[in-house]
Each structure stands twice: as C-alpha cells, then as structure tokens.
Image (tube, rainbow, N blue to C red; front, side):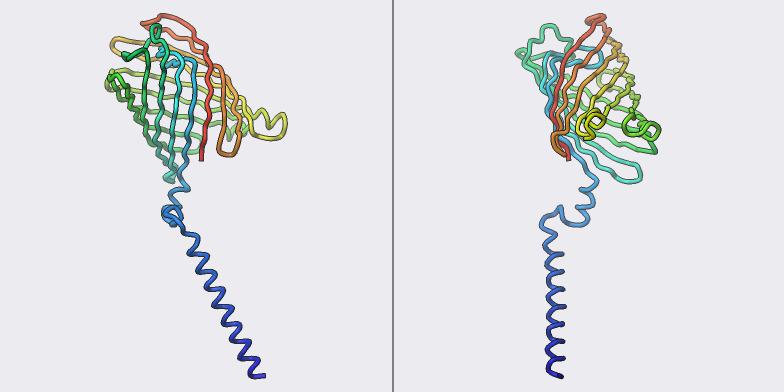
Length: 272
C-alpha cells in the first residue's frame, strides 16, 4: 500500500512538472517576433493602415483642371492614442503622361507629363460624434514650385441619430497655403447606402454619394467650385475593396471662366 502511495505521488509530481513545462513553453512560443512583445503588441493594436491605387480620367482640384487622366497611389496610417486623440500620416500621388495643352496646371510640365506627390500628417480629437482635425500637407512637384499648407476641420457623424444604415457625415474645413498665400474654405456631405444588405441580407456592397462646395482665394487667383460624386464600393475580402464611380464639378476661375466637367474614377484599396 505504501509503495502504491509513493508511486502515485511520484506520478502526480511528474504531471505537475509536465504541465508547468507545457505552460512555460506555450508562453515562450507566443513571442516569436518584436510585434509579439506586450508593449509593442498593444501599440500595434491601435494602428490601422491602408494602401490604394486609383485611376481618374480627369484631375480636378479646387475648381481647376490640373491635367487629364492620372494614376493615383496612396498610403494612409492612423494611430489611436487614447482619450479621443489620434494621429495620422499619409501619401497621395498623381502621375500622368497625357497632353497638358488644355490643363490649368499650377506648375510647368516636362515633356507633357504631370507628377505630384502630397505628404500629409495631422492630429485628430473625437468627442461624441464630432471629430476635430489639425493637419499639414506638403505638395511636391517634379518641376519645382513646391508648396506647404495647413488645415483645420471638423466633421459630424449622424449614426447615433439616424442609425448605421441611414447615417451621413458632414464636414467643414479651412486651408491656408503659406507658400502661395492662398486660403480655401470647403464643406461637404457624404453617405454610403448598404445596398446589398437591404437587397440580399449581406453587407458587402454600398452605393456612395457625396457633395461639396468651396472657395479658393490667392492674391492673383481665385475659384469657386461645387461637385457631386456617385459610385459603388464592393468588399471583395475582409481587407480588400474595389470602388468605381462618376464625378461632376462646376467651376468658375480666372483661367477658364465658368465650366462643367464630368469624369470617371476607380480604385482598389487594401486595409488592415
């Protein structure tokens, strides 16, 4: 009997040691990279990023026809700091090899092509359904004439009032370009209707609408513009979506006078 008790105790001890070893190995195996470290992992959970590539058959900017069809890559990075604060950084590019003879480009072109790179960064603060933003944009051109702009804006989401299916968002923003001494005021509204949710009960496709109006003034230039956009977005996977749509702008500037422009655009976006 005594021997049986000793054997049982020994087996129990071995089982405890084995379980402890398995637990230690499991805890150790969970950290296989720097991103698995608790401090860095907590930080990465607050970060979201997206990469996109688009095409627009016209490049219209604040009432000016900058150039014809452009390819527009973009990268965006957002980080939630807590207590309603967040920071962001991003890049947007415009590249074209089209005929520039009829464009209202702010910059000279080389061999009929257009190349622009915008670098942006800023901070946001969210309280209830409002978001306040302060940001900076650097406009870099391959022909020189680079400019720098600061931005202040506020937006409001009506989801709490109207529910997710019918919520729209409105915004107002002001920009000041220190290089050109240019001031811009702009406001707009946007709405995405969950069309496939209503039709099929699966929320993978939306119909997207937006409208905006703005006024841009500099010592030697000015423009008034207003526009509409209508399109659709399809979530191909959890991380990838495709969008396409039609854009319209009415403009009045000192270069071209009054006019209208209709064009098409499409993009693919991958986000995490």
